[in-house]
Amino acid sequence: MKVAIITDQHFGFKKGSKLFHEYFQKFYEEVFFPTLQERGITTVIDMGDTFDSRKGIDLYSLDWAQRNYFDRLRDLGITLHSVVGNHTAFYKNTNEVNTIDLLLREYDNVNTFTECKDIDIDGCKICMIPWINSDNCEYTYRKIRESTAKVAMGHLELNGFYAHHGYTMEDGDDIQPYQKFDRVFSGHYHTRSSDGRIFYLGNPYEMFWNDVGDLRGFHIFDTETYELETINNPFQMFRVIKYDDTPRQLFKFAEYKDKIVKLIVVNKSSQKDYDRFVDALSAANPYDLKIVEKTSQMDFGEDAAEQTEDTLTLLDKFVDELETDLSKAKIKSLVKDLYRQACEVM
Image 1 (cartoon, rainbow, N blue to C red):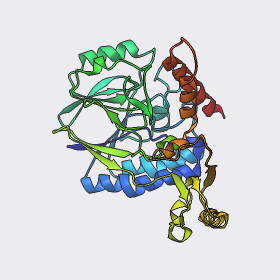
Image 2 (image 1 turned 60 degrees about the vertical axis):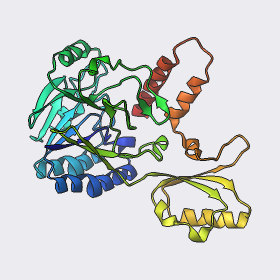
Image 3 (image 1 turned 90 degrees about the horizontal axis):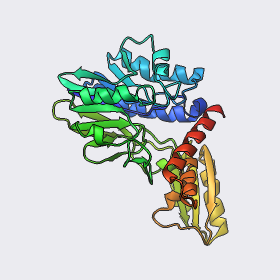
């Protein structure tokens, strides 16, 4: 049997941004649901952070999520197994109050996992592991030890994997308890990485600048062979353009409509040609356009996209440059937690 795995969908992102939800919708309408129907998939496993904010969700985002995702799963006869992630647990020390239970009670096809539990899907035992916190830590690790499953799926914060592009988690949990499983699949980190046994599958779409060029999508897991198939999302939200005396006549400006664009100016021999290029790009109606002029300190080589860092990446780099005897990994964890809390009340 083949099941779909998806994680970190973050419905309600940016306080219900219509732009982002329309972008999300293209993925569900043109990639996710057509694939489920073509493959005859009747089970979806959601590995956490279905909603973005633990504090609540606006009415637009809830209505959007119901119409475009949960109603469609129900109407197609698809069962959804959903673990609680750190963004869907209201309290930081317990999963008891969570948005999945509270907002999706009307859906009989949705099973929520607030505690670690083995389930059986067509003869394949899977250990479902929700977000681990101070309240459930001891219980969760005991259930992991007792589990007879060969596969685990959850929302884990483990050391040694990319938390996001360019940053490896150093202040998470030890991977040792998970070595008993043949396969471990996890959400939480939005970029894909693997050590051959543990797989972080990444989220379905771009949400931040440091997602540029990083493939996103969902996966199909074969419960008999343990084979994992990647289904990529071809749609992008963030686009980087390097202007290097680029001919305006040959450039496809229409592709940048409703995108968040950063124009990096490498060379502009003719101010008139450059101005015409910028005018044509602006006329294509990108949602946001930022222009970065070349300076002597900036490198515009193959890694030019790294000039497009978001706030979390900049905070990581700031901590890396600190002169301190304290654990930089712990400082980064604290700073990120404070930043996310600030985003929830802004």
